[in-house]
Amino acid sequence: MKNLTVRMIFILAVLNILAACAATATRHFWEIPTPDLDYPAMIRDDPRHGTAVVYNSLFCEQDAAACGFFRAHAHAHSALVHPILPPTGYPASQIAAADCWAARNSSPEEVVAAVEYLENENREPALAIVGDASERAKNIRACAQKAGNWTGGE
Image (cartoon, rainbow, N blue to C red; front, side):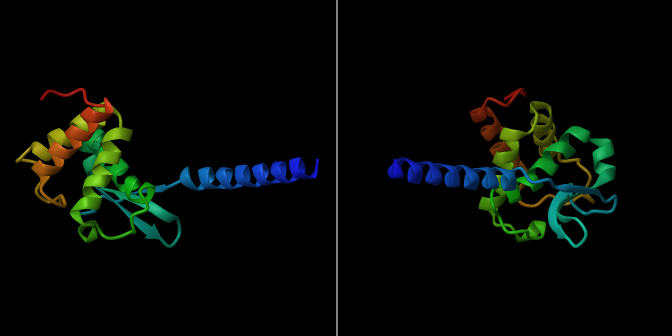
């Protein structure tokens, strides 16, 4: 009987730890519209809001679907436990991982819109894209296809 009690206490402790981890993994992010942001979206530590995704609200008005993808990409840096850095501070491997995470977790419409935006050589020049846009588009498409989340053409 004592052995059973010890096992039950252990199981309850493990369940409590798992519940705490799940609560942390689904923590809320603030999203802050910023019309003069130089990027489609980025993640930062905000003194008032904690971890926040800041996004270019003018870009989002023009291309809501692509904006949704880039906001998901910013969220991905936290979900993947990357450090919170300025966009140009991330190595290519972390940018690719965040793109892949967003390709799996965004709607198919957002994924296609982001790929089309990155492939568009006439996109808004004032909005900075980190890394090689065409390589990022290829990576996003491949990740979405692998996840069954691609509805665009080849």
